[in-house]
Image 1: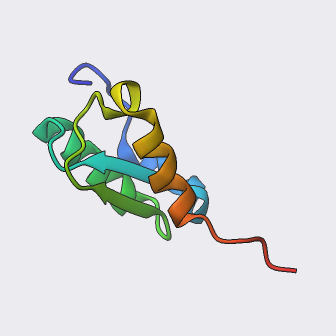
Image 2 (image 1 turned 180 degrees about the vertical axis):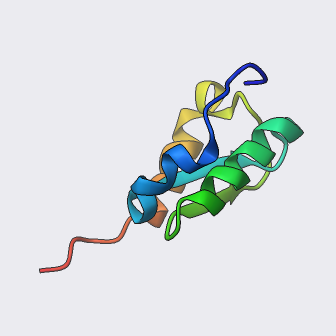
Length: 77
């Protein structure tokens, strides 16, 4: 993460198609990067997952899956 030189603006074209999850207990650097990317990609969604850490997707995949599913909207007709 600290060596990645990709500017946040690279993600701008993703806009509303981009959803980022960040854990409330994730490392500060990871939380800041997620925030910067969300700010650069207008219309994106940033979801703070309470109690989640950097390893939550690997350790508790069901919790992450439930968070994602709860944010999905059905396709418009």
